[in-house]
Image (cartoon, rainbow, N blue to C red):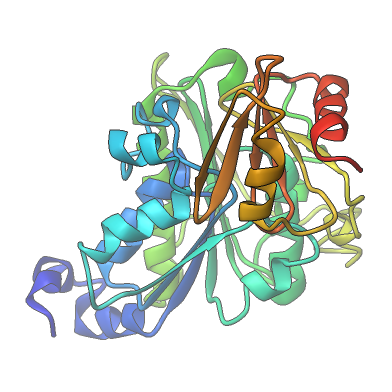
Length: 337
């Protein structure tokens, strides 16, 4: 057994048998922002055999305050978060298989992303995606470690199909009430705590320590020294996911679905066709203030002041506005519907 795990193996609830189970396990982290970077760091260093990381975004300077795997060079290059994270973590533990997928998680690709996965870890920043993960996990029978952080508040629970309620049993709506890191901020310590709650429940599940798993949803505010714990209890009889098996988030979304991104003024437009980034660089260069291209994305600074970020799969970020109408107007002007 690799000496790097010696202290973890000395921890009796894991031991050598638990370490072998970790090596035979596969986890998928959806979202490689603040939560995801902490989660990935824990999973890779713990020796989980396969760590699949999925994120649609790229590194910016505003991320560096709380997204622990990234540095100024990553932001300057505009590297996709999943790629930058893999680069860092591959130098931490070469025995772990790390997969970096630059993609938006949708109802169209979620089954493929979760193929062969034992546990899903929530690193997302919006409830639309969390409900998508919840519904997919409960349809496929994959446990889902939920975590969320905003301001100085955090929540976490591990939800296991057939054993616990699902996320919809506690939260019936994807509306966060307007409180996001984009509107009220977030401090880094609460992110670390939430992700650590997720990570330890992941380890318990992966080594088979069912009796040690927490049967509650924890909620806390580390600035105001508040802590609450709510027993998971029984599923809601009217839950459309875990009881009625309807999985509403898996219904096919509109191709031009808009999504406001947490952390900055940005609107995502899913798009309907892939981009040849070299071709689009040549096409946009005469019409915009500046174009910057790397193998993963194209950034175009517009004369109007906003910025378009094009990804190969057809997704576009309109940065510099949170107004859906404005974002669609700029998209139509430079990309076309």
